Image (cartoon, rainbow, N blue to C red; front, side, top):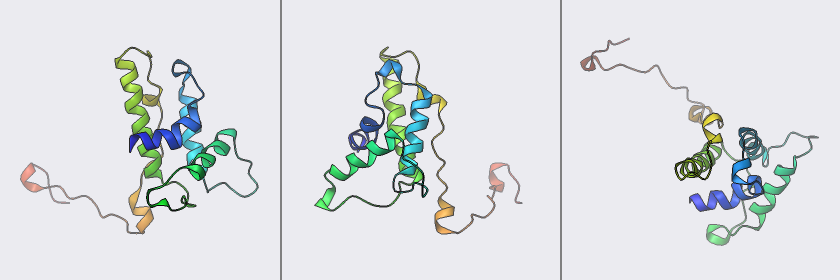
Length: 135
């Protein structure tokens, strides 16, 4: 699965950069472009990165041989891309390939599940046996 994220999102988005040249702004731009896939405001021109990303998705082979999704990428999917990149960049720091991990200073979109369903979560209960009090 991680290899799929790299192939579909990281390589077309930031693959042209040398690892040592990768900065926080590149990751911010990548996450912004991912959020705009199939979700670009009317009349807005796509960035160069945004033009590259869907092109790869269209030509990618999908499980079951079906067409690619025309839906926008969810915040959860973008967050998974961030986790994969963060893991790879942390490994690069540990192995001394780079001295700085730019993913540690970038915030991917927040995943808010209740907005999708419309059901707002209730207040969190504290277990009295754990030393808390019931609200």
